[in-house]
Every structure is written in C-alpha cells, then in structure tokens.
Image 1 (cartoon, rainbow, N blue to C red):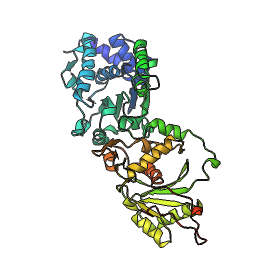
Image 2 (image 1 turned 90 degrees about the vertical axis):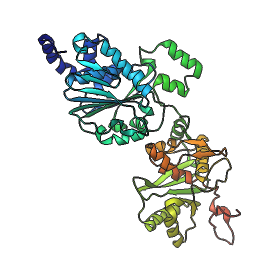
Image 3 (image 1 turned 180 degrees about the horizontal axis):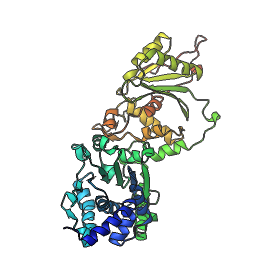
Length: 461
C-alpha cells in the first residue's frame, strides 16, 4: 500500500522522534502505557550499539517488549534487519511471533499496511524485515552471516539457547552497529545468558523484571507460587523475582553454597592448627590458567595464577617457594599437564604427589578421583569452608554439572564437555579441589629418627 501524502508527511515528522524514543512509539501507535520496567528496556534499546540482557519473572511483559520493538525498528531505520531466535520452534512461533502478529493487527491501518506478516518473516515495504529462526545446538547458524546498515538481534528465552549459537554468531553480535537484546526467565546458572549478568556483565546493560514490582503480574499468581513452593524456593526466585536459581537440576555445587562460603569470616585460631595443603592445576594451551591454591582447615587462599606454564622448572620453583613460605604439609598436582612440574620438583628434592583426575576414587560413591575431590570440596563448603570473593572462582565452582552413571556413582562433567556448552575450564576450582585429594597430617606428627617425613598418600595401599 502506498502512503498518502498526508500520511507520508506525518511519518516524516514522527520518525525522528520515535527513533530516539521507542516508548513514545508504543504510546502513540498503540495507545498503551508501558510499565516502568518496559520503559527501562525501551530506553536501553534505543541507544546505538545497545547490548541489553533482561532476566524476568513470568508475565512481566518481556515478550511484549520484543513484539513492540520489531515494528519500531523497521519503521524508524532504513535497510534494517532483525534476526529473531529462541531455543525451540514452539517458544519462537507460539509466543513471540504470535505476539508480534497480535500487535501488528492492532496498529493503525496506515502503519499496518506497510507490513506483511508470515510464519517466519515480518517485512516492511521499504525492504527491511525481521526473520524468525530457531536456534539449536546441532544447527547453530541461526544468527550467522547476517549484516545490514541497521541490525537488531533478538534472543527470546535466551537461557535455553546453546552456547554454540552465540559462538557462531560472535562477529555479527559484536559488530559496532549491531543492537542485541536478550530476555529470559533465568532458569540456568551457566551459559551465555547467565554470563551476561555475571562474568561478562560489563559488556551488557542488565535489567531485571521482578514480578513483585510489575502491575502486569497478579497478586494471586504471586501468592500461589509462594504458597506452593515457598518464597525462599528457586521456583519463586525464577518465576516471580526474575532471579537465577541457587541451583539448577544438574548443578553440582549451588550458587547459594558458594555465596555463603564467600560471606563467612574466620579467625586464625580456627584453622592454624590444621595441616597446610597446596594444590596446583597446571595449564598448557589456550586460555586456561595455571592455578596454585592453599588450604588450611576451613581457610583457603589463591597463591598464584598465570596463563599456561611453558617452563616446568620455573613453575616448580614457584611451588617450592610457596611450600617453604607456608610450611606446607603436602603438595598435590594434577597429573594431566603436571608431570613435568612434578619431575622438576623431584630434582629439587621435593616429595610432591601427582593426582590423576580420571583415576580410581577412594570412595565407591564417586566415578573417579576428580568427582571424589569435588564431593569433598562441596562438603567442606557446606560445613564452614571459607573462600575469597573471587568472581572467577565462583563461576568455576557452580559451573560443572553432574549426574549418576550406570553404577550409581556420581559423575562430574568433564572440562571438555563444559567447553562444548560454552563454560570455561574451572581451573581455580580444580586447584582448590586438589587440596582434598587425600587426608593429610601435619609434618610434625611424623617424627622418626629425629627428622620430619613427607606424607605419602599411597602408603599402605
């Protein structure tokens, strides 16, 4: 449909105003008043190059926001493209795409007729368009290779979108002119969406749509969730407050456990009687860190980090210095990349211990040594362990998922599997976990022939 001259003049006047103020577009086109939360989102996405991530409770209007900004962007910007994705076809087509159709039908006829809606495209007569593409782990190209003078990426239910999709779309998402909006009920405590509110939070404008503060969410719904699950439950946190759960179904160590360990205080007399143990998780390639951790009873401290170790002798010297400085009673090193460090320590007269993460567990309840060490570390955290307020360590501890194998043993997710779903290798947590490899007794308890003896964890086995 061709616009009349009067309508064309009207749009020519209005578009510069709407371009800077999508909330005004909503109010003037649909005659509705966005909530304060929705206004905050609309204001954020109006900025060129905006990167906005919204975690939300149920029913707050996040999907409606997406349905509003699609015609706003196509109306106000020339040569525009909007790739829209969600984890499943049902989430995309039955929710957002259906919502878009409803608001398109509610537009004044002059604007309505500028657009055409189909099952997977929403096209403006100027040639600008939005397209619906389901993002799956096996087909991560949903957002790949899309370029335009003006581009807006929309990711609905982003907590369920696999990391591979974001990795594949990396260059497009980070383009200088690209705006990106993600929204989701915060159901998972790992992945790209979770990281946008945590480890990568400096790159995003982060918003929370709390159902308790939204006029769109009924008090009856809030009370029903509170009565059924409790206000302190993860269900209430996710569905009402729009907050990440303290634990996902597969998560081995919950965020709640880690936060409590970070917030504890400990006095020296509460741990200085305990043996001092050093754990080292080496790294050789990629972005992984070499990490050295100390633990004494309920106390822990990160001693050293560096990107990989390309000189085993230097690294061994660093560990030896820490061993002497803290009078450590045992040193445990991951066998994976640690054999050279251990050998260098041997030449220095050090009695360190190599630990095979995939080796046999001392506890039949765990599938291997790594799962056992993480299990012991989890119990330590629950029972009073104290850790530093370290964002990377926090994400390391809550990152791995776990399950039960066919033998009924707890099996911790491997580092390779974590990387496949976009989680970094938990090097700091692994280094701390190594301090739980075997029981250790203070050296002075091993007096014999008037000399100290190093602890041998394999003695008597």
